[in-house]
Length: 256
Image (cartoon, rainbow, N blue to C red; front, side, top):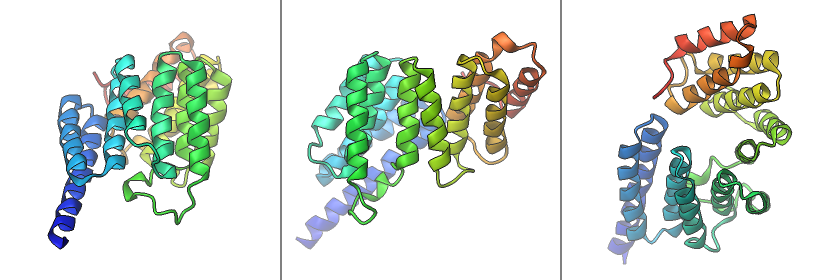
């Protein structure tokens, strides 16, 4: 029994490492390598009998498919993750509902998206700090949920709600100097540009660049900054927009 339990723990630990390696590759824009790591993580989670971990890996794969424009695949992966982990712990359930909400937003399933967000919010509220959640689920908190909710509203073209939730995410985050903070500022800048508030957008995007410079190396985060600059092109005659674009170019060339 001891040997069997040890074997299961080893499979689970290896699966968590493969999951993390996949995420790091994905964050760096190495999509094919990320997929290979995640497939290995799925095998490890299956061998360990860890359905929650396997569902989370499927969630990462859904996120990748969504960002690569494969929206139908993203929905199918998110649904498989949710169905494969019925009765998950509250925080894990919140993660899976959020992944599904984002995929649904990309397919313009407004009702489904809002329903999934509501379920994610209810699940997170049911997860006290001492609820015995998996260690790898630590990143799902109020700030993360607010940011993910904002992203859904962006894809549904609801700019006011998107701005409100990104602002809430920034206020609720525990580390104002993190990669997550840089991402939220860059995405908020995109929303402000769409709302016709270029000066405010430049200020917020400038904060994202401050956070990225010398501190964070993430192709995805840098991509969000360049996307904000693209959204500000109609206002390129403004000095603030020209300065921001120059700073973004110095940060790193736009990822391909």
